[in-house]
Amino acid sequence: MTHQTETPLFREKWIDYIYGLQAQICAALEATDGKARFETEEWERAGGSGGGGRTRVMQNGGVFEKGGVNTSVVHGRVTEGMNRELRIEGAKWFACGLSLVLHPYNPFVPTVHANWRYFELYDEDDRVSDRWFGGGTDLTPYYLFPEDAAHFHGTLKNAIEPFGDELYPRFKKWCDEYFNNAHRGTETRGIGGVFYDHLRETENLDIEKLYRFQQANGDCFLEAYLPIVAQRKDLSFTAENKYWQEIRRGRYAEFNLIHDRGTLFGLKTGGRTESILMSLPPTVRFVYHDEPAEGTPERTLLDVCRHPRRWA
Image 1 (spheres, rainbow, N blue to C red):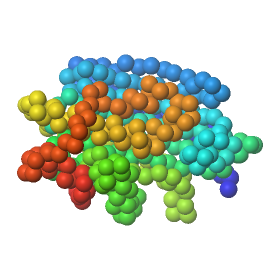
Image 2: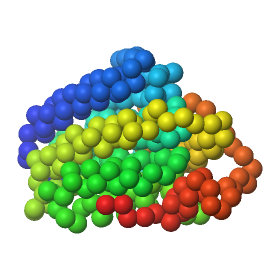
Image 3: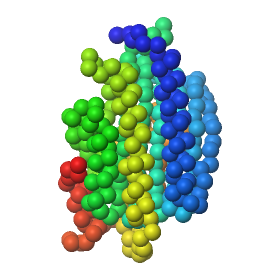
Image 4: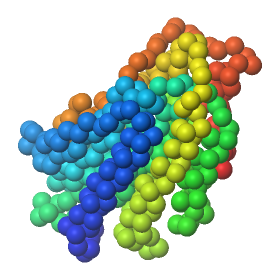
C-alpha cells in the first residue's frame, strides 16, 4: 500500500512540532528545578545512515538529579538485523520523535518517562509503504500517593477521550503489560500511564486525526506531571527512603536494558549510545532478595506494581 498524502510536508509538520514541544518542556522543567539548566548537544548519525538529533540533559539540579529531553530525526536503509529482530520490512525507513526521562532527587517525587514518535517505511522507489505513530507516558513512583496516580491517569484520559472512549482503557492496559519486568514474574516498573504503537490510518482515523491524537498526548504531559512534582519536591526524607528509591531504580534499569524496544531499536540501528542510555538512573542499588515488610509504604508500592490498579 502506498500513501498519496504529501508525506514530505507531513514529516516537516511533525518535526516542527517535536522541536517546539522539546523547547516548551525544557523551559518548564528549568523553571521547576530552579537550579540546573539543560545542556544542549546537536549530533549527526554516522555509518551510512542519515539525520541526527538534539540531546538536552540536566544533572545535579535542585529537583532533578538527572533528566533528558531528546529529539531525533533519523533515516536509513532497513538492514537484515532490523528485519530479523525488529520485524521491520521495507527498503528504507524514517523516524522522528521525542523521548524524555526525569529522575528526581527526592524519593517522594516519581520518575517519569515519555515518548512520542512517527515512523515511515519506503520501497526502493522512495514511495511510502507504511507509516504509524507510537509512544505514551508512564509514571514510576517510589512511594504511592493515590491522589497523584489519579491526577496523572486522569489527565491522560481527558486528553485521549475526544478521540474515542475506548482508547484510554486500551492503552492503559497496554502500558501495564508493556512496562513489566517479565523476568521477575508480574512486576511493573511503576503505576503505568498509556502506551501504544503502530497506530495506522483507518477509515475513521486518517493521518491528520492521528497527528492530532499524538499532539494531544504530548501537549498534556506538563499538566499531568508538574503538579505532582510541586506537591512532593519539598517533602523531607530519610536515608532509608533514598535506599528504597535506589532499589526501585535498579528495577527501572533492568527494564530498560532487557525489555525496552526503544533501547533495542536505537542500538540495533546504530543510534547514539549516550542519548539512548540517557534514560538510566544516576544511582541504583541491587540487593539480593530484597522484600519489604508487610504493612510498610515500600510494600504498598510493590504490591501495586505486582497488581496494577485502575486509577481513572
